[in-house]
Structures are given as structure tokens and as C-alpha cells.
Length: 383
Image (tube, rainbow, N blue to C red; front, side):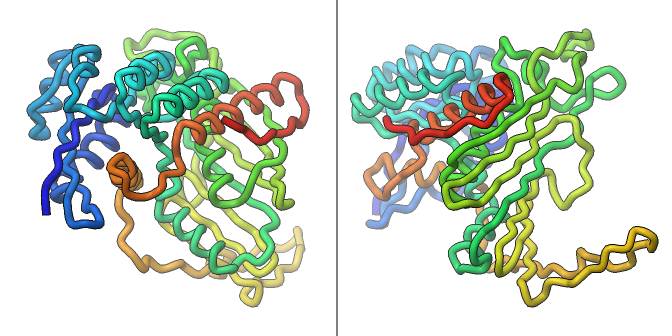
């Protein structure tokens, strides 16, 4: 058995997502567990170099997690043949150019989503990577959340029978920033800086729907900027130009209807910050990030509609919990391990730049539907 160092350029890991999910909970954890085990008993050991604009921040982050390599020069890092993977979690606007530069250097690329601001740019990235022959991956973390893994298990077991509909509710109240500090950066609400919940979340819903429920045939979407004024990190008021809520309906080729609401302007009264209810002929399920509840056809109550009498039946008691029959690792870490194995030639990997482009396709069509106030078809996307 051998331990094989894998040089990884990690760009943009001083931000919340890059630092917490990709560095601390993925790469650092993989290093602490002794690397990624291959079929022949060898282990791939991530050897990251952290790259960022702020020298003080990047040095402190590296020191805090026992990482000896860090820097501020992307070009110097790309020139090092030891580092075979380039990862980006920085700004969406700069991402396509950085990924293309990394691909030109022969690096395998792994990226946060969205991979670009629009479909054509995303497809250009995919074609460039394909022509260069490098491995490529796009973060699609929600597929490995315990709640959605349980939904997949139910579907594969035939629990639902014919799936009729899916209802998704995502979001929570993001404070405006005047009375209480906001939880999200101000660029999220500026369209010229890559903000907007349609660009942010519709990419997620594309891969969730495709992988769990079926191929999308058409969609109808309306967005909104419910809160027109917010306060930035310096407590200065600014005009919000990006959408902060989106209400979308998807028709699938298999006949199911999927409705997903996403909002930064909603107060939570549900099981989790995101929930999906799947209704089928033989049973239904409601899944959050971690837990999943089921109700089979034979366990379905028969309520009586009577608006003149207070409802005394507790409908929550009619649902059974899907047990944790396995250990669920961090979703980002699981996908990192799959990508590292793929780079080493072990295992197929479906979640590449073409899948990232599909997310941007759905974003573009959602914006088109909102703009033109109509249903639009979702054509098959070929690379």
C-alpha cells in the first residue's frame, strides 16, 4: 500500500462555503482520515495549496489547519506541475476565465456552482475541458444529503408507485441589515455582481430534479425582488437589484409536476430549511436535509372537511420516520472523494461541466419564462 500525494490548488477558500465545506469539512477531514482509499489499497492524500487575494487571511487559514502551502499568485500555482487539480469557490463572474486558464495548463478542474453566468459560457467551458482531455467536476452537494438519499432509496424500492407531484420549499428570512445584522453578503442582492436567488438556487434544483424525479420537459417561473432596500457590510443602505424569491413549476417527461419555492423572504414553519414532499399513488414522503418521513397508502387517514369545527386530528402523527441505516458523511466530502478517485482513473463520474451547464440552461429558461410570462420548453442539452 502506498500513500500518493495529490496537489490541489484551492482558490477562494476564505469565503464561507469554500472555507467551511470544502476546506475544513472535506479536504482537512480527508487528510485526517488518512486519505482516500483506492481499490488496490493505496491512498490518495490531498496536498492543498491555498490561494487567495488577502495574504494575511490565507496565511492564517493555512496555519490553523496544518497546511504548509499557501500564496496569492494564481499563475504561479498553475505553473507548478505537482498540483494537478484546480478548485474554485470564489466569485462567479471570474470563474469561467480562471477555469479556462487552469484547463489550458492541463489541470483537472473542480468547481462550485454556478460555473458561469450563462449557458453559452458554461458550454464553452465544457467543450474546452473535453478537448483538453482533463477531468472536470461541478459541486452538486445536495444529492448526498441524508434526507435526499432516503428519498432516493424509497424511489428505488418502488415505495411511491407512480409519482404524481413534488413540492419543494426552500429558504428563510434574511435580515435586511438595518435592525439586525444580515446573514448573507450584500453582493447576493446585486444583479451586476452575480446575485439573485434564481442564479443561485435553480442550478441546485436542476440536478436534484434530474437525479431524483425525472427529466424536465417544461417550466413556468416567476421571480421577485420583495425587499428593494437592504444594508451592506458597512451598514450603508443600498438598492437591491437582484431577485430574492423565485416560484417555479416544472413539468417532467414522466408526467409528474414539481413545484419549488425558494425565498430569502420567508419565515420557517416546516421541518427544515428545505423540505421536499413527494406524493405517489402508493405512498408519500417528506424529506428535509437529514430526516425523512413516510406515509403509505394503507396508513393514510380519511379527514373530513368541516370548517365550522376546530381540527383536532394531529396529521403529523400519521407519518413514520425513515431510520438511519447507514452513516452519512458530509455531502461535500463525499463528492470530493468521488472526484479524487475519478482523477486517478477509478470510478465513473457523472457530475461534470456538462451537468453544470444544464443548471445554467435552466436558469436562463427560468429568467426567460419570468420575462415573457409564459411556459417554456427545456430542450435536451448536448455538449
